[in-house]
Length: 124
Image 1 (cartoon, rainbow, N blue to C red):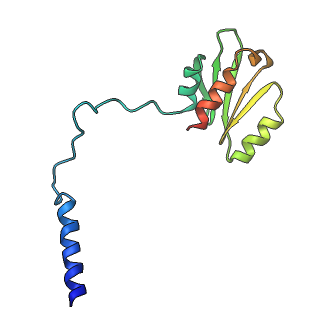
Image 2 (image 1 turned 180 degrees about the horizontal axis):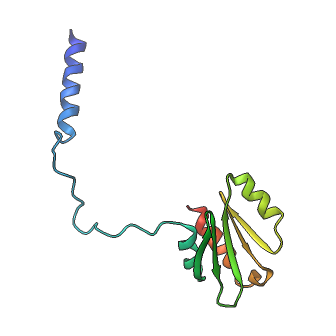
Image 3 (image 1 turned 135 degrees about the vertical axis):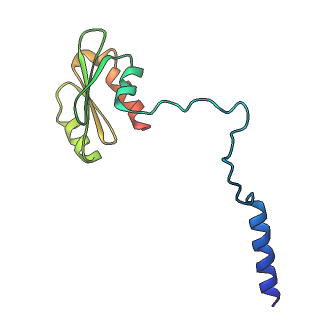
């Protein structure tokens, strides 16, 4: 009998602490209405890396131009292993970021835009 009373008391205390089920939506405290950070999409990461004219010519593929005149490409693969295989066999520079592979020509060696895009996508 004592265990039932303790259980009932614990249940009442727990329900009282949950706010009672108000139908009003919860409001954020003042000053916390900051916009959410931009998603770590390939297009956003390419823009953040300083690339221009970002396009998605096909599903799972993004291209962008570097101001120096070359192109950087991001491709999404079905698995991290497939992306890694594509990076290992790629000519030029290539970086893996989870399901994504980032490709750039050797001219990107100094700018490392491909590395910047991959680092951004790794936190995706």
